Image 1: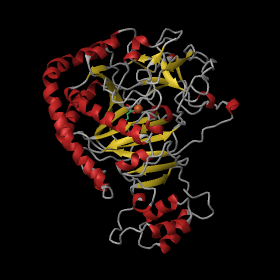
Image 2: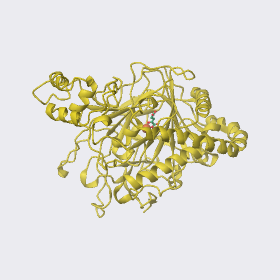
Image 3: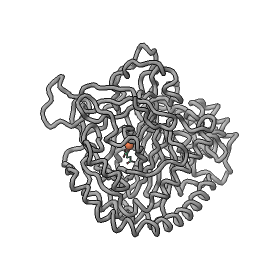
Image 4: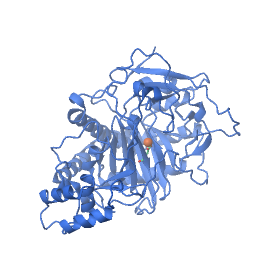
Amino acid sequence: MTNHYLATTRDSPAILHDIIHNTIRNTVLVWLSNIACTTVIMSNAQRKRDFFAAFAKPKPAPAKKPKPDTPDDIPTSTTPPTANTTVQDDASTDILDTDEESTDFKLALLSSLQPSLPADALLELLLACDGSVPAAAALAAKRRPPSSITTQSSLSTFLPTAPSASRKIPFPLPPIPKFKTLHLTTPSQVPFHAPATLHPSFLPAATATSLLSECLAEVPAFGRYEFRLFDRNVSSPHTAAFYVADESMASHHTRQGGYLYNGTALATVRLFTPTMTSITPLVEKFVNDAVDERIATVYPDGKKLKHMLPAGKWRVTSAFMNCYDGAKQSVGWHSDQLTYLGPRPVIASLSLGVEREFRLRRVAPVTLDPEAESSHDTSPPPDKETETETDPPDDSDDWKWQPEGQVSLHLPHNSLLIMHAECQESWKHSVHPASTIAPHPLADNKRINITFRCYRDALTPEKIPRCKCGVACVLKTVQRVKSKMGRYFWGCQVGNQWRDEEVKDGEEGGCGFLLWARFDEDGEPIWE
Ligand SMILES: O=C(O)CCC(=O)C(=O)O
Ligand SMILES: [Fe+2]
């Protein structure tokens, strides 16, 4: 399979250098860690992996029709990207439709002024200039690429604001207009539009192949997440399983209900496969380095955001492994639950097999100091936050989040995406159903994704506060109420449990329990 990103990095030799450098470094690291790990892991982990599956209750994937995405899903497009960065209109309305003239007209006009440029380059210029033809023409003239280059259109070719090694990543990121999709096709663009870093080719090729075959062998043990949303039972339109790095992590699952997801104990808890274990030091190093760099170059005053783990402390304790079997399997808009991760978590997501489209959309601002504004406010948290945007805004705050457009990137085999500290609390992500996919030689129509996570010792299942129903709570952050923005609370999640029996009106369940959660500078819980 051609590597989408390598094929489009012509304008960024620094990236190619990075890739080559990292591949050599990764090969050495994997080789060293293989020597260190294989003997221990092969003899213990392999043998005991199935033990945990035995006490768990795997729910076989039902042959149900996948449910639609969550209702807050915005209209989306599956049109593949055509240039390095393109903005795609999602609501089938014209990007410039607020102006009197149509895009086609403006494109024709611009094309007559800049006849050597392809249509997608012209469109990018128009977008960059808010639809102004004279401004776009002037910009094209100023930034004219060498005449021999006519086939590739990229904002980076034209714009002074294009990503480059020296350009600073803005914080906070500028908004993407509502209903628009910004297609990113080079890794260097990613952090300029989403709080993420993408390595397009992370593991040595042979390691990626062995990991993929191990993962494919795991798939029969996977199940669908089943939960309740908007008074309906919902099952995820893909399958997954939960993995822990070692037996001490797994032991938490045997106590007091174990790891929950939407109020229900995770059905399948498995031990890391040998290759998952052997690549763990590599993933940890890459993430810690990327976080260090982000702290130094992106976050205000070169300091980590409040509640983030201290530098260098990110380690892999657990993972979710997801399988998308065929073009239509997907995961709807969501953010990952904070319960065991704690605030401002960093997650590393490795993709294997079929390349699929991943989307990110900002849903709330990043609050630098969530507790500062309201540190003396002891009133209860705002009405129970859901994973949706349907909550009425709190009018007393006289503020409403302006919905934003989305970023789309393709995650090829062996790419590693880091979702940085802002990603789960201010953004949502999804894997969109595709109209077509290119089968992978080993995985056929399947995409495997592993999200490596760093669970906190202070947030093991038995330490999580319980609601009045006696069930461990879920940790959430306030996203809709300005004066409490970014604050954390523990909430009852019984209402999200899948219900086998018919549920009458007013009996949706849950006790409505809500408790403010406090964390220190490094995100360690302060229990009161
Ligand atoms: O498959 C992916 O890329 C994303 C998976 C995901 O969002 C999750 O495991 O929470
Ligand atoms: Fe996720």
